[in-house]
Length: 168
Image 1 (cartoon, rainbow, N blue to C red):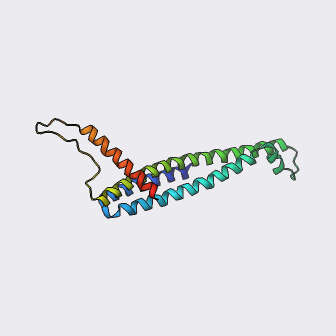
Image 2: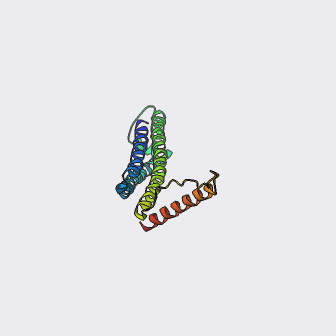
């Protein structure tokens, strides 16, 4: 479980640094997107490896395969050996399942960070102002349609991020 904790902490730390770096240094926004994509590929390859191992464990857990594992071993208590083997495989399976869950969460965070970074890179390339939409007010200080403007800005950012992802 320590590995899972380290993976999640490292991914959170990197995402935080990457997003703040892109906000502080606009020239690196596209580099941030590339770094996040590389991390996403790493996470996906780890997921594929663990998924393959999980499938192999499912196969190994079948009763006939556990019996085959001990076919050439002579023992006075073969049922104890089979039960011990089954418990060992199930423990490994649950560990891999936990790692896969953690990697899925990391993948989701990375995909979200990529969308955010792509939007920032798009805004930077378009030469527009920062993404935080400030509600507009009239001279008396009353808000005039600030919420709908923020919503529209957010929708536009998501649309641009989707277009940028579709290009790649």
